[in-house]
Length: 448
Image 1 (cartoon, rainbow, N blue to C red):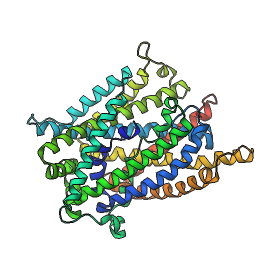
Image 2 (tube, rainbow, N blue to C red):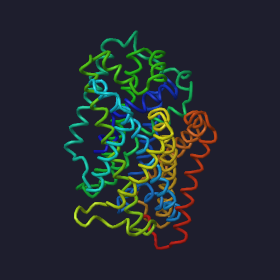
Image 3 (cartoon, rainbow, N blue to C red):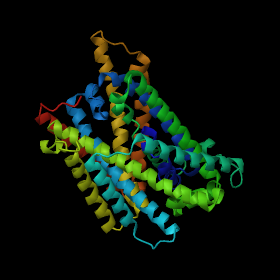
Image 4 (cartoon, rainbow, N blue to C red):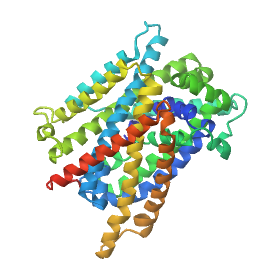
């Protein structure tokens, strides 16, 4: 479920072309490899702490264990705004993807916002009724979308690419060229949602064994898939041509590559699966956002009536409605402002989300050794130092470097505007401060 919700085909068709075009070009596969290693180090500490977080909650529960409830609630609001920002941004991708799909079938041209709003309406209804895509549906879509990308990869590699296979990932000069911070931003963004392995602990017979295995397996599979498929995509055109196409038409790079190597039928199939993959991704983030609001309302951090379930469906319907209102308002603002759905709406909101998520990962990695240090002083430490201290500390170093690079390159992602980049950071800082202040004023709020 975690791998399916990560929308692997949606990533190859969305963040990957943007990472190539706006980031470090042919060096993007290395950004995925680096991100995978850092997140695996993070996962070591994350899974070590999981048995001590009984509510199987999100990052803020883990942060609260190590850094206290005030800090934990501050990051709860950072997490909420990060997930909402990503949901808003992905509506741009699905709107443009659906527009290209229906036009390829000969239907009249409609504005991308029409399709984005159709998806928004369906997600809002499903969220109200607590209807999620079943594991069977997610599994079928996952197999289909991964299979066609692997077939595409195999055909490209089998034919030797356009004029040889890409070697940019092995060149330090290429890896560090362009905006490596933006490349890391899109790489890290592509993994968002893997922490849901801990959220599903109540469905596992032996969560203390299953959650670590699922987390490592998810990260490993996703990381290898992204790195290899990005390399194949670059090889399909040659590094220079692929970068040029990613910069001019990022929304159609995957479809063009598929048609070139698998024919028109393959191109149509991948367009359909691209849209369904993004829909599963949006629904997943909508449900995560709704449950954040629902849980925070039940803990008196938000108006309590929002934390009441639906009388018949048992769904967090008011929380879902609140999420829909916020997302809908920003989506309409983006349409009225005539933002490009991919290079502006998605990338700008992805910037907000990624800075927030990386900060959450960093805070969680800091919280892990602090939590276990207290248990060591109390004589209750049963976790090896490699999991309680070494791996989280290495993750802190890696994530700090990633965050610095992202912040340094953030202006180039938001239209070369330093003001907007500063605004993104200020928004997240203000959100954290509001949550921390609320926890300080209301001692009854519990986050862990």
